Length: 124
Figure: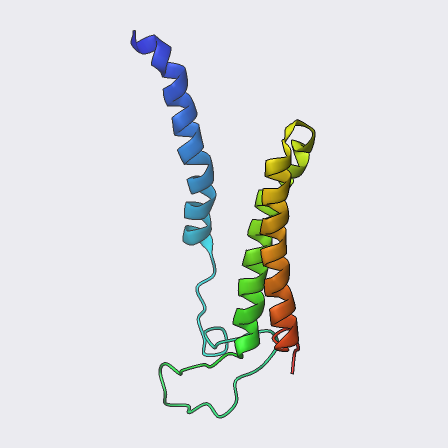
């Protein structure tokens, strides 16, 4: 009975070992030379201004546009996840499902127009 599960056990061992082995090796053999420049905050090429040299942790404020773009990306990425299977099975769907997807796309289009009109997509 156990020989049936030996192959599954071998695959589980390989599935756990192959991803973890490079991570462990990289952790053991990496160069360990920390300095202040390597540990400083870096975001999109903008260097932090007015840093106090004695401060251990500094509050960094990012522009709201970063978060707006991230949220819009997630919303439209999820839209693609829903629209792609619908488009693949379009030949097999009834009119109800086509109208349903039209309403879904219309709601997202209204949200995009709202964001556009409020100038949330402008990088000022």
